[in-house]
Structure formats: structure tokens, C-alpha cells
Image 1: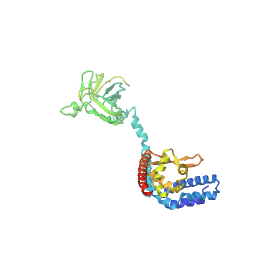
Image 2 (image 1 turned 60 degrees about the vertical axis):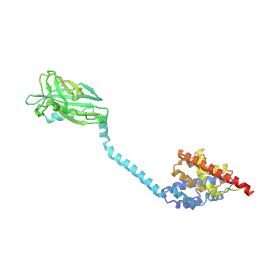
Image 3 (image 1 turned 60 degrees about the horizontal axis):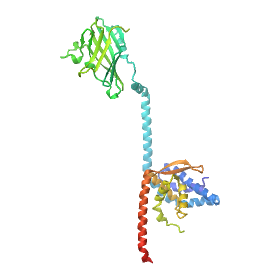
Image 4 (image 1 turned 45 degrees about the horizontal axis):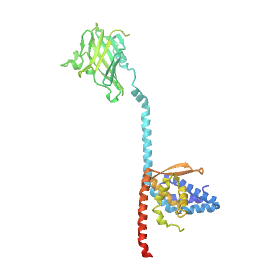
Length: 264
Length: 115
């Protein structure tokens, strides 16, 4: 239906519009108008040729229309918008390209592995002179100010000189990611059922390294779970139970009791 | 009826366009046809001048456009008046009322002298 007269008219309008990307839309809109007007005239009985000519004439001066349209189709703004859009999409694609390969790691980080006994496995391979006396899964749990402390795995091992020591993993669950990795390892001391105490760094004053019998450090932390690799040295062989305590600020922030016998 | 003067009309075309759109979304030719019908063919503005007005209103956020199939079965670019456009309509209406009141007052005052 696009009459050559319509094309010519639209072409003359669009020549005045400097922002080329908008010309197609303007042509489509003006052509639609011309067609509608022509159809209305044909319906009133005009021959198509006359109707098309009248429709074009009713539009007015194409140069004038083009000049006016150019004012609201500023090339500067138009190109700026296009560049902006390209930049935003480009950035989004780049971000995706860089993050997608890490999605697995991020998901794992968020989900937080339920088991993190890797540190103890590593400890055993690096210290194969130790004999495993007991491999324990203590069920003790301690809640304190939003934290849940537990011991997923503990090992009682005997060194070549016969001394016993405990190596264990502490897991701290925390719903608030800002509270990850709470610091307690330098103040976590222990006492056994026979009344022996095993001092941490915090209790040894003045400091003397050989007097520290309970210590460790934080190993990995995720948004909702943190893990620690801890040890208690020179256990009393007769002790059956051990309680790990963090009470630096008066209350028992950590109070976990585990049995030293049994296990596998 | 004599055709209205083009200059008198051009300043108020924005007002007429917004007023038409406030009654419902329309495409360009629909507005022209309605304008002619409502004004009993007094307003036969150059139809092409409608589009620079619509595009300027769209750039200023007074109207929004979208493509939709018209009752004729063809796809047309419809215009929808925004909240900002409705506020602009109120302003323009007030301006127009003020203007016509002033003109009428002058005409009323001048009438005896002309008689």
C-alpha cells in the first residue's frame, strides 16, 4: 500500500532529522497516518490516486515538519542513550562472564559444607608418627548469642614419646554473615573430669610457650559457618571426659564436653 | 463557518492534544479525525504538525508511546498521557481560561466604542 508519494514525503521529512536511528520509526508513523487518511478518503469515494495526493497535501510542509521533529530527536542525547545502553549491557555481560565460572564456588560458600574434617585428615597425613587412640564424633552443642558451637570430629592421638593429645574441629554456625569467624582460639581452655586444667594462651601469665596446652586457630569461614582446627596437649591418660571452655568475659560463651573414650 | 486562524491555533495545539489523550490512548490519525469531528471541521490544522508536538511531549515525559494493533488490524503507535502530562494539561487549561477571559474582557470593554 506504501505509495511512492508517501515514501517521497517521509524521505523529505527525515532528511531534516539528524539523528538517523530514529528515522525508521518516524517514517513508519507518518506512513501509517498517510495510509489511514487515504483509506478514509477512498471510503468516501475518492479515487486512490487523488486520495493519496490529498493525504500528502493535508500533512503540510515536510521540511517544516522535519525541522520541528529534529528538535525533539537530538543527535547528542540519542547517541548518548545508545552508548549508555551499550555500556550497561556490556558491563552486565562482562560481570556474568567473570562470575559464572565462580558460581559453583559461591554456591558452596553460601551453602557451607556440612563436613569439614579435611583439616584433621591433613593433620594425620602430615603426622603419620601418631597413633590414633580414638576417632570421635562428639554430639555436644553449645548456644551463645546467636552462635551454635559444635565439634564435628575429634581425634585422640598418641605421639612416639607416649603422650596423648586431642586434635579436634570446632564448627560455629551463625545466621548473621557479619558475625563470621568469631575469635576465641587463644582463650579456649580445657579441664578434664579429674580436675586437671589445660591452659590457653590467655591463661598463661607471664607467657611461657611450654605452658600452653590448649590452642588452635581458625581455618575456613563461610557466610554462615566458620571452622577451627584446635588441639589440647598432654592429656591425662586416666581422664575420661574433657570440657572445653571460653569464659573470657565471665559467662560461658563456649562450654563443650566430650568423651575421650570410645569412638573408632 | 470560517476556518480558524492557524496562529491562534498553534499555541493551543498542545492543550488540545493533551485533552484528547486524557480521554483515552490514541494514535496520530485518530486524534486528527477526532479533532476535526469535534470541532465540526473548524480545526483542520496541517496534520504533520501533530507529530513534532507529540514527540516533544514524549521527550518531556508528558506522554508515552507504545505499539498496538488498531481496530483496523494494523499496528499503530499509540500515545498515553502520563501523570506529568495531566499536570501539564491542568496548567495549559488554566492558561487558556485566563487568556480567553482577558480577551473577552477587552472585547467587552471595547465593544461600545466600536459601536
